[in-house]
Amino acid sequence: MSSRSNTPAFWFIAPSVIALLAIGLAPILFAVFNSLHEYNLARPAAGKPFVGLENYLTVLTDGTFWSSLGRTVTFLVTAVPIQIAIGLWAALLLHRPGLSFMRSVARVSLVIPLATTYAVVGLIGRLIFNREFGVANDMLGWVGIPVTDWLGDPTMAFVALIIMDVWQWTPFCTLILLAGLSMVPKETEEAARLETPSALRILRHVQMPFLLPGLTAILILRTADVLKEFDKIFTMTRGGPGAATELISVYIQRVGFRVFDLGLASAQAVVLLVFCIVLSRLYIRYVYKEAEL
Image (cartoon, rainbow, N blue to C red):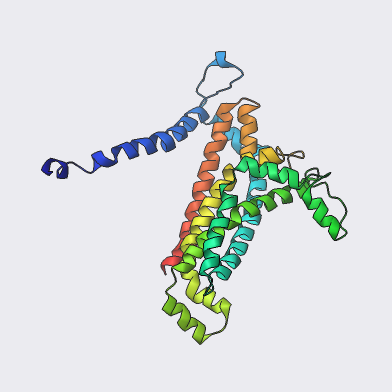
C-alpha cells in the first residue's frame, strides 16, 4: 500500500499521454515534415528533397485553394447559424415545465442523425435530391414548383449540402443547448417568469449566461468539423457540379491523392489547421468570455 501511494501519478497517466501523442501529435508532425519536402507519390524514385517553405508559398498564391476556403467559410457561416437557431428553438420548447417525458424521448430520437455516418448521409442526400425520383422534387411538386436539378445546378447543389448538414447536426446543437438550459437554477428562472412575461428577456438575461459555454463548444466543434468534412460531400456531389461544392477538404484530397502531390497537400492541411486554431481562439475570447461575466 505504501509503495503504491509513493508512486508518482505520472506513471499512472503515462500510457494515456503516450497514446494521445501517438494519435494526435505524430500525424501533425508527419504532415509538417512532408510540407517542407517535395513528396510526390507518382515519382517515388525522386525521394523527398527538402524545399523549405516553397510549398507554403505555393499555397498562399494558389487561387483555387483560396476559392475552396471561401466556399468552406460560406458553408460554415450559413449552415452553423441555422443549426444553432433551430437547435435553440427546439431546446427552449423541450425545456418547458412538464415535458420530462418528451425530453427523454427527444434525447433518444435526436441521437439518430448524429449516429449516421457521413457517407450514409451523403448517399441519403443523393437519393433525396435526385432529379428523376428524389423526394425533394416530389414535395415541391405538391405546391406547383417545377422539377429542380438539385445536384446538377451549382447553387442548388450547395443548398442541398447545407440542408443535409442542418439535418444531421441540428440535433447536436439542441442537445448541447438543452443541457445548458438544465443548468439554470429553477428558482431564478421562476422568479424571472414572475417578473416579466417576455421569453426574450428571460433568454437574454437569465438563460444566455448558461448557454454561452455550450455555444462556444458548438462553434469550435462545428467549425473543425466543417473544415475537415469530406465523406458526405464526396458521396453526395463529389465536389461538383464543376467546383461548386468543392470545399477545402475535398480540394486537399484532390491535390494529395489525384495529383499525388503530398508535399503541397500537407502544406495546405497545416495552413487549414492554423486557420482552425485561430478561429477557435477567437470563439473562446469573444464568446466564452461573456459566459465568465
